Image (tube, rainbow, N blue to C red; front, side):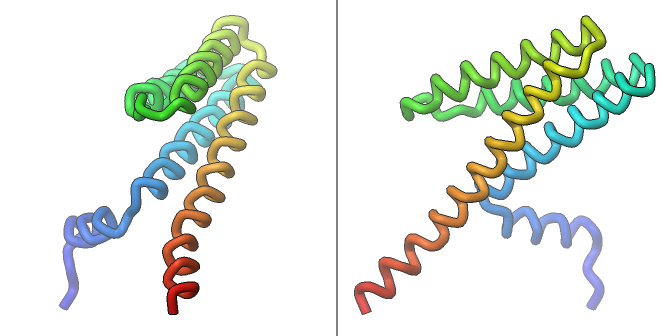
Amino acid sequence: MMSSPYEKYRQSAVQTSPAQLLIMTYDGAIRFVKTALEGLGSGDNEKANLFFGKAQTIIAELTTTLDRSYEVSESLSALYEYMNHLLIESNIKKIKEPAEEALGYLRDLKETWIEASKLASAAPAASIGSVV
């Protein structure tokens, strides 16, 4: 039986962990910053502005969804605010360097969450193995 695209989406959504969603969010921000940088490089300021705005929207969402009960949240919030500042600076001054710096932070954070996700998924298996 062939399932509808909506059913495939629902099944995929159920199988997606919070860590995977966060990594996908970073992927989106990375993609948007890269596209904005392409716009700057080609002199397409409208494209750059549009995609800087999309990346800033994702960063705002990352800031909003921080769990403030963890101490690291304040540091992440400050980093997100700084990245937002860098993207605004790139967009206003039409220079790549600040956005490239923000892109580096986004890539580093994505890699950190990928590693944390691997460690978290391996931890239960390791503890089960040590009990047996």
